[in-house]
Length: 330
Figure 1: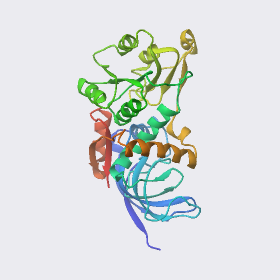
Figure 2: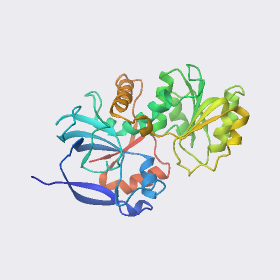
Figure 3: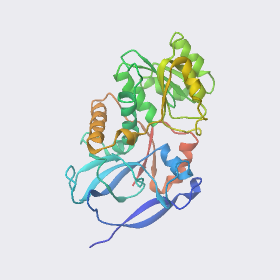
């Protein structure tokens, strides 16, 4: 049997960007329920930073990366929804997409429509599936209807720009926050109804003003520590606080009594809680593929790096110097 090798990025200890190492490894053949995939592009996400730093502790050594797109080169026993030569994209556990080739479980791998490029597929899967579950499944007690206000932090990032466009398509009034006037303008250009520079304005006070003192039905917050108190203050009665990331650090300990005055709800979801099975993943992906193919959502790839430039890519992401999506080309 011919041995296939692959360049890949791995870490043997947690830390800063200096722990990212480019190595060459042997890649085996797929077993039952697995595929061998040749990547064309790989997505970069903040969860990769959490895993590298140790905030999300995983066994070491660890090959990073949660999403990618490419071509199936071999299929293991029991895989019926894919075949050799298929164009595919995925967001999937376990991590490992920072590479040329990998053997991986087939469960979360979906056929990529011909109308969507490999670069777009790699840039959108984790972010797009995240927006799908946030706006379509992770909903407040009173639901979301056209015209309702929602607050979305970090709205000029990869997840945020997809959310701005998808929310507009659903008729929602998305109030965006971002860290510069330029990023606020980017959010507005992508469908946000309002945008707030959280570095120069009190976003909670501005939200109350925009909503006539009522607050929003739901806050989607991937920032964490820096926005937590303001997010809680921005919610209306029976509102839902969705904490789905910690870009500024973990949120402080929560007193349940703080939720009582407005009967608030809090949840800490993740994409793989919703994409829990082959059928659930495919349904979410089909929804994403449809809004992208229709032109209602455009995927903004603002940064491209070669696999060898992964340290520079992580540095830019952590410094909040990026907008839209970032991909690694392989």
